[in-house]
Image 1: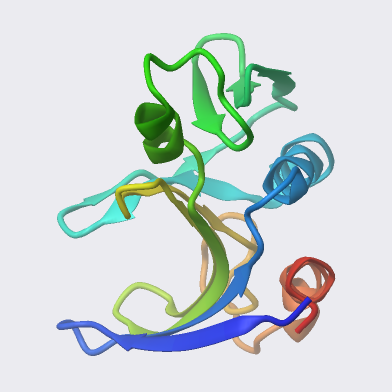
Image 2: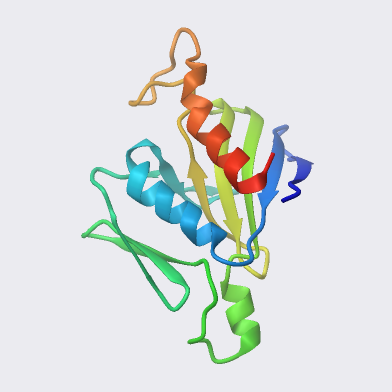
Length: 169
């Protein structure tokens, strides 16, 4: 698979390099299932948009199920759904297309005020709206988000491995 790489510069001075992955088929579903069943303890998730950042971390393994194209991540007290595959329950094909992941990209953002560099995965729906951002371990911080004296670069291994496997990059 040929990976598409793009670079975006934001108004806040950050630069984000995206490595897109194919969204056809069940690749996004397989990736998210792996992330939320095997690596949940290392992740921070939620939409990150201008003016709002939901930085959710799991305290125990969530239950991961699928139904009609939707992946459900259930922690018990709360849950969320992501349309990651073909959805037949929509009233129209257009609505099904809008709901499903239309773009998925691994990213690295540099120049941010909070962490300097961020490694993640972002999904967008058919309208180009962000569905979720998944942040991977950051080599500049420990598990409690205290800045480390020296970066621990091995903490980027999961992001690098998954990016390579899912984008071919």
